[in-house]
Amino acid sequence: MPKQPGTRVTQLDGLRGIAALVVVACHLLSVFPAIGRVVSDDRSAALSSAGMWAVFSPLHLLWNGTPAVHVFFVLSGFVLILPFTKARAGGNWAPYYAKRLLRLYLPAWASLAMAVALIALIPRTASPLQSPWADMYVTTPNTGQVAKDALLFLSASTINTPLWTLKWEVLFSLLLPLYVLLALRWRRFWLLKLGLVLGLAGLGAVQHVDWLIYLPIFAVGAILGVERTRIRDLTRVWPRFVWVPVTAVGLGLANAEWLSPAMPVKGVEALVTVGATLLVLVFLLTAQAKKLGDTAVVQWLGRISFSLYLVHLPIILAGVTLLRSVSLPLALAVSGAASFAAAVLFYRFVERPAQRLSVAAGRAVERRVGARAERSAGPEVAPTTGAPSSSVNDTSDDGGPSRDHSYGTGSTTREHAEPRRPRQAVSR
Image (cartoon, helix red, strand yellow):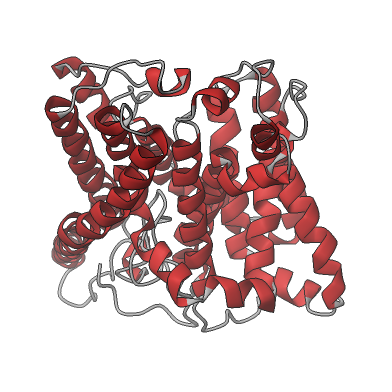
């Protein structure tokens, strides 16, 4: 097997940041009455000329949250598989689970608490000044709703609906050993495996089976992560102009649901997955996309993307409720700016401490596992090095938008030729 390159795929951090920005734009524009009515599945609703262009043209890509979530899931699979491509990956899974689950749950719980507090301060109410889409999020939280949302295993309520993607991130994280087995076995048949998991996603889309739609997307990312060197070698000889139609096809498929006012074909989610996969490959393999992904602003977006994803919708809804009677555009401008400010604070005071705590927990579990193995093996046997994901960079795992998780910090997309000493996807 070829040696893995010792590079940092920083442009994928940038892609995650762009995807998070698209999700925020999706929720901001959906508050407008006419646009929100259309995205709430009433495609026959009247739209102005500008609205038609915004919804039923390629411009929708700038605020289409669905492919952004698919991109998040592909990136999660890509990022979490990287440690298992290293020669010394192996050992006990306990440190990985300790780190990963804390990394997901702590920020999610904090964002849920923030959403409940905001609703208590500024109760959401329905209004003709906002869209039916925004009216769907009117709720008065109760203990049962909050407890259900905090589990992350069940469908999220309308308190902080973006948490629905964390359900799939948690399930993927728990099932990671199976994804590792799939991605690392039968390497010569990687294209066939890729086709099979995309086929499963298509079947799930046609049958409307959520787990069959979303869980295969992580497998796509895992296969790409394992085969990234092979794919890079295969495409290195391609002329530069070939990537222009590849990018166009990726963008078109990602936006397939909104190509026309007609209802989309059954199973369109599978086309969105293919489009999202192509866009990840474009950012992974082309110099132009890498340059975009590595710009300072886009890297900053990538750094705060998980925090932004978690906090933005409750803030938007609170701002709209407070200011819509004055001016809806003003309400959206203020709430959008407030979302970014809150994301910066959330990243500093919640997400980063959660990262540090999860790393410390992973190390503690790893030490206990190593000590137990040393005692059981006897004095002549060296202790094990710990969980497979213990060899992940401290900033290399998580699951919703940000650099350190498949959303996170200090690049989740860092690749090493050898593992370091263990340090341990939008509201629908």
